[in-house]
Image 1 (tube, rainbow, N blue to C red):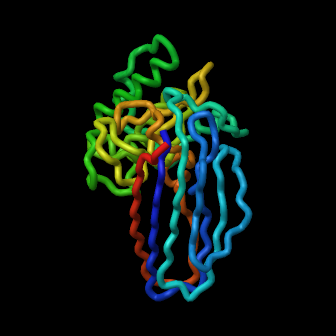
Image 2 (cartoon, helix red, strand yellow; image 1 turned 30 degrees about the horizontal axis):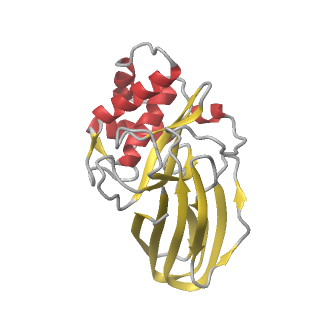
Amino acid sequence: MRISVRHETTYRFDPPRARVIQSHRLTPSAHAGQKPLSWEVRVDGALFGSGFTDGAGDLVRTMTLDGPVSEMLIEVTGEVDTTDTVGVLRGHREIVSPRVYLRRTRMTAPGVALTALSDRLGAPATALQHAHDMAGLVAESVIYTPGATDQGMTASEVLELGHGVCQDHAQVLIALARMRETPARYVHGYLFADADGSAHEASHAWAELWVEDLGWVGFDPANRCCPDDRYIRVGSGLDALDAAPIRGISLGGGTETMDIAVSVAASQQ
């Protein structure tokens, strides 16, 4: 499938900032499941540093915008050819050991609800089946409910609430997998359509679990599936905070607001 993306993030600062410095993880890498045909990240008046590939195989680039900055628009546009690899991440170059992703973070720390969820899992027939069982259990335990949570909620808090969005599904699955000694990481990107075929108008998130003899395998509990050719993978991390596509600082105090608009469409082949 050929997928086109337009992603606009608008920051507004009051009072204006003297300078804004950001690290962007906004560009998809090439692997067996996707081939970027064109991709551009643009900010009027900004200076971009040389990009680099981090240890996890994700593309990172720094940006500096001198002020006064009262409003800043980050425009991401591109087109990607995607291939269904049944969720298996193949041909993605990285040097970080999978065992790094056993590390627990504040967002994925164990709790009473997570322990109870883990106790519901039986002995797995295979490592792959165990991963599918965990993803299915998370999908059953957290009802997809837009607006029910905020970005700061931990996996344990979300599970106790029983409602959440794709970020929450991913972090609960990551926390559960690590409790079961399975390396797991958070992935952000784009989704052309939901499982029922309806348009998906926002960035998307899912989890990847390390399965022996297969490597990293993606699981999307929010849509009860593994990523296929509807997905564009952009970046990863230990949790949603670590994998944030935009991180940065600004010089000056005051209020900061952010608006996001995303459109994902199938392009003509």
